[in-house]
Image 1 (cartoon, one colour):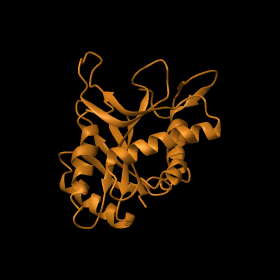
Image 2: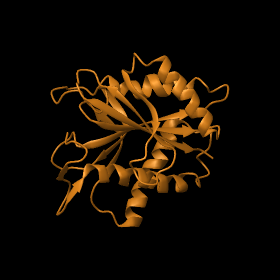
Image 3: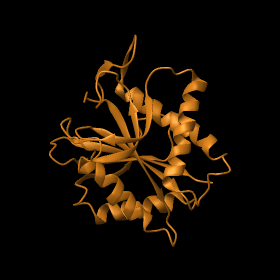
Image 4: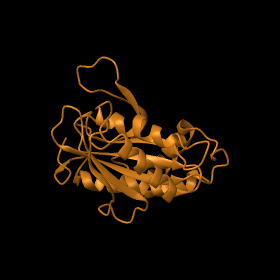
Length: 219
C-alpha cells in the first residue's frame, strides 16, 4: 500500500492522492445517507446487510449525480484475503472502495455495524468492537493497510451515548484489539461530522493502522 500522503496512479489520466479518495468516500457516504433515510423500507428494525445494501446503491447513484466516472469503485460484501496465495477468503468486508486498476490491494476498507446505547441492543457495542474493529486488527480485513473505517448505524438516535458505550468496550478489549492510541476526534477529512479515530497495531505488522469511526443515524 502507498503511504497516505503519497500519490499513486488511480484511473486515467491524472494522479490522485489516496487521502483525497478517502475524503471523497466519506463525503459520498454522507450525501448518500440522506437518500437512504428517505427509503420507507429502511428503519431501525432493518438488519445490517439491508442498510449497507441501500447505502451501496445510493453511493453509486451519488457518484452518477456528481459525474464521477473514475474511482472509487464501490464493492459490497467483497472477499478479503490475508495473502495473495490464499485460495479461500478470510472474510467478507461490507465495502471495498477500490481506487486503482493496478492492484487488488489498493482499496479503502469499511465495515458496518448497527449500534445502540439502549436495551435490549446494548450488546451491539461489543459486536462493533469484537466482530468489527478486531477483524481489521487480525488482518482478516485490510491486511497491511494503514487506514480503514467502521460505520456505525445508530438505531436509537443517541450518537453521543453510543460513542461512550463503544469507547467503554474498546477499553475493555484493548488488548484483544491492540489499541495503541485512544479515541479522538478526527479533524483531517474536511467537514465530515461524527467522525473519530483509533490506532492499532495489526497482527504481523509493525506500523500503526488508523481506523476511522463514522456514525449515521437510522430514522
